[in-house]
Amino acid sequence: MKNSAFNPEQQQQDIGSKIVAGLERVSEVFKVLLWEKAKIVGLSPIQIQIMIFVAFHKQQLCNVSHLAKEFNVTKPTISDAIRVLDKKGLIVKDFSSFDSRSYSIVLSPTGEGMVSKTYDFSMPLKKQVDSMPLEELEGLFDTLSQLIYKLNRNGMLSVQRTCYGCKFYQKNKENDYCNLLNKELLNREIRIDCPEFEEAPSG
Image: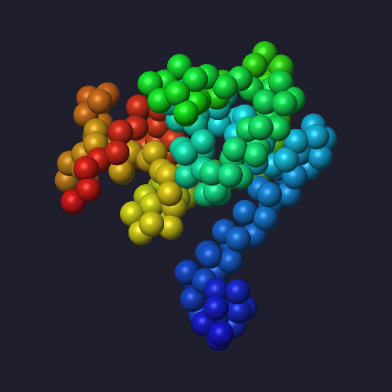
């Protein structure tokens, strides 16, 4: 137990433990902000997250299977959330795929209005981030994007759409390069949720 990242004595001698404990604190802030917005609009946190995701991502990603992976929850949990959103008239089920048993979801006009009320729930956190110097933000982003990639490769994170795991990404000596955009990428241009992401073959 002594080497737990949540043991203050362990944190004093191990910066990795301090970072893990710090990430846990930040995750708590995110959850609090989401719950506060959920109470205001009468939806659950996962329902809000689903609607925001659908608003900003390609329709082929907006199905039960992918959403379950995206938010690291079970398919029944996603199905229940979609059932409530459908009942409230916030989403529409699209059965236009070849498999008549599956469907994707799109926002209804009412749903789009709801997203306009909820998408900014994380703004208090973003304001604090924006107050940091640009050089520090670029370093922090570089660390976060690489951490997300490593967590995905280790099976701890189901979904990631960062450049590092994309088939279009290439490392040229010390430089990052995108073969889709045909350009060298600066650190701040590395994407953490790329619309054109296609997973690189393993191995």
